[in-house]
Length: 308
Picture 1 (tube, rainbow, N blue to C red):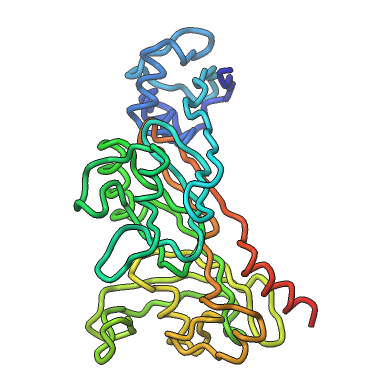
Picture 2: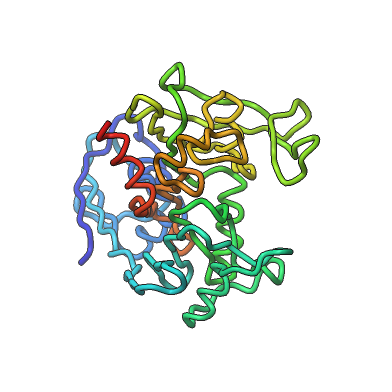
């Protein structure tokens, strides 16, 4: 079913081209707005409006938006609990479980997202290095949550550019030790390889610019549940930044977490979960957003803290 909208032309759009005005008014790309006008989907005071016609303040726009062509396909377990949340011809969105790497790497013999999708018969893009075809971003083996993989070559280049230009919204939930002060803030600290321990990363003056925004959602006696929005996407960024603040992710022994607290909460990995992922869909540029519930071990740790 199409989406019908009737809107007055605001004063700020007076004299603007129809395609440019629609793009601004509805948050569409100018290409899509022009297509709507060319296909008869835009009326101005009841008359068909071309993409180059001019808007008049106080006039009425009648806009017919086509139904998004993104049928949801849910596939149960793919590999070791990995679930496909959504897929179409261009993308596949998964809920990655703990203990699954995104792609093969030296020394890793466990399951991977790439192999799991192949085993389920889901074709992915061939762009990218041989071992990580279709992969446009990654989650650590010990980090769970939502991520997207490109199925078409167009989607691969589109999403790679979107991540590079920081138009993708990535939100994580992290359980960190103690109580960050202030409770809402930004961590702006460069990250690079640890100067002495090559398997780790650290805040170093010569590192790459790295920016993390956070807000405390819930505070407990020993820890805080934090909503995290990444502006950049460095390896281990959240873990490194909160460790540098002396508030490491609970259970993250690599970055200085208290092993006693981890044991009490029965955690064998860092409490870090990719909660939501939003981006403009490569097929029609419409904004899409996907989310993932906490896995059982993270939820159990929260329940123990709430019971104290």
